[in-house]
Length: 124
Image 1 (cartoon, one colour):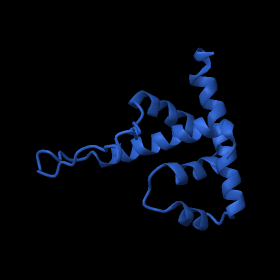
Image 2 (cartoon, one colour):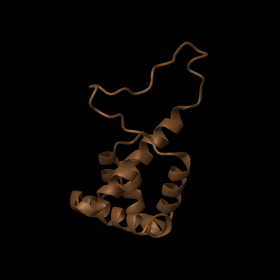
Image 3 (cartoon, one colour):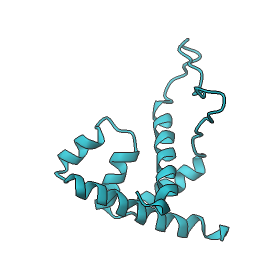
């Protein structure tokens, strides 16, 4: 993966964890006696990877809706938790490994271009 797309990759990974966390919050585990403590670092010096704030997740979601469909479907399969494994999705869509990897890079590039123009322009 090109180094200039690392931030886009990290942002989509955080969005995917946020989406997965949001998906599972359907019950009150503490009231049902099924509470599990939140993720903790395995070592004291290892930081916990935070989810993103809801408003940032909304920005990511709105940006993904603008990414061209041929790239969006690859990004969704890779980053957004689903029942279907990304390799199964690739086979179902009849996309070669090379095209899948290129679709990921092009999708990240399109995503980051749109996201940075909309939401990061005030930082420069």
